[in-house]
Image 1 (tube, one colour):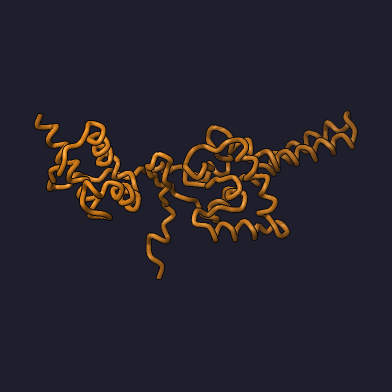
Image 2 (cartoon, rainbow, N blue to C red):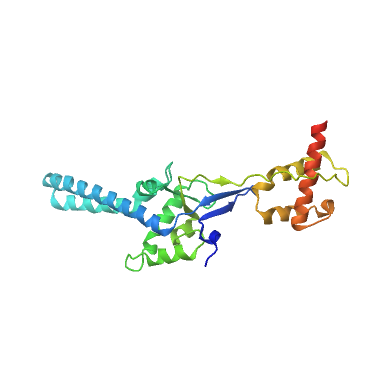
Length: 242
């Protein structure tokens, strides 16, 4: 039986500052529902527009009316998702109805270029014969449920109604450990920052940073992290006493 955490779509994303946020990735079924809603919306718009153009075709001519209808279909099929996803909300009406949003892999809003890439490659995702087998296979094979267009554009689809959740800072250790040597003001600030931001990093990231000053802590790995936090707590207590 799969482990529960492997079934959870809440995934940690590390930002450039070393801080981690958690994004709830949207699976292919909900995304397919959003696509169906958008398909119906576009269909209704094209049908209503087609009827209006047909009546106007009496004055414009049949060939001109047919050309307008074909051009409208092309624009709706290719530019409809680009305009909405590159906008402020980052989602088409269908995605908004399903509570979804397209963002960069870092959780930031996508750019116009990324919106163009991910949607213009939808043609390849829809192969073979518009069955979307390529896109579905890519979604199921990637950890973040990215279709080929997402991989090329560096985008993901997340649940918009669940905001990014920063990891909470770790509480200070119960026992404070005195510093073995004197530290400069800059080193003290660095130690305090490590204590304040430790909970925003993954365990591996904390250990990686703590290992850089193993000479000070006298330990590495988890033990080194705990000892640095204990020293930072002692230093914080000392400043508070003053």
